[in-house]
Length: 251
Image 1 (cartoon, helix red, strand yellow):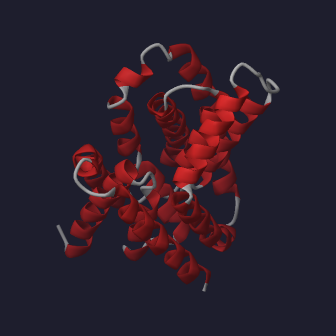
Image 2: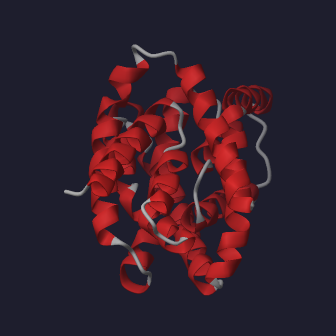
């Protein structure tokens, strides 16, 4: 294994940890693929492919919270799967140059969402408490989750925070349950995009396997780290680094 490949594995571990601790793995894994020498579009589809393992690990660790949520999760899976397919199709139908123009803004959006994560969660919970028993329009929830799937299939940085806020507004329940349901919904949008990328996109499989292997290790170690390391400074550091990356990509 070359030094560059070893660094990809380490970046995968960092991405898995970031996904568990701070909620935004792509702010570590995507820049690592750029540093590995991949063009932005190839780096994006490779990153989406590699992060499937992280989503699977998160879902596997949430079986207690998902108990009794089968019907609700089934509906969300259909919505985000369709969205993920649409997002992947949108990504691949655009010229690579167009993606290079928009990606700094997407990285910046993900970084800002990470900085504001706790405020977004608190706002969503307050909204859910005020709306408890007061149904909204039937079409807004499904439409928003399809759009979440589209964003997840297109790029995905910060998609978990967006999905968590939407679900928390729609349902008054412990945040652990909402988070577990969110993991399934966003994981399925990711998987839908990968099913497209496997057949028609230029995935760098060596990079995807190395990064994915590291991500599985990092995601597994995440709960141990959360119990011992302050989460907020880590999250802020990742977000600031993401904003720096966004500026660099824009320039």
